Length: 84
Image 1 (spheres, helix red, strand yellow):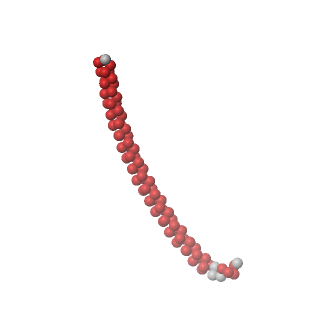
Image 2 (cartoon, helix red, strand yellow):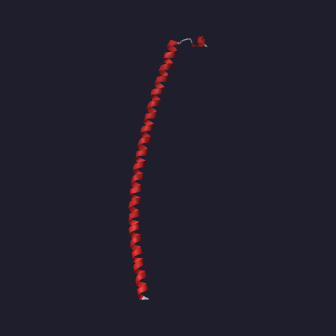
Image 3 (spheres, one colour):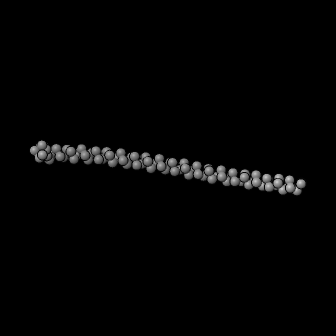
């Protein structure tokens, strides 16, 4: 009976040590994943800000071009109703 108890206790100690090692390894992996997630969120935010800046710059340029085309159209075709 003592041998069986010794074997069972030894197996439980080994299982607890294995579970502890597994938890430490899992904790390291989770911290690495959190670090990668934070980097990804930062890159995503940076890219989104760059795209928003590019779009707003393009919108301003298009608005200026549209106004200039309208002014040129008024200069070249002062009597638009005659063309219709």
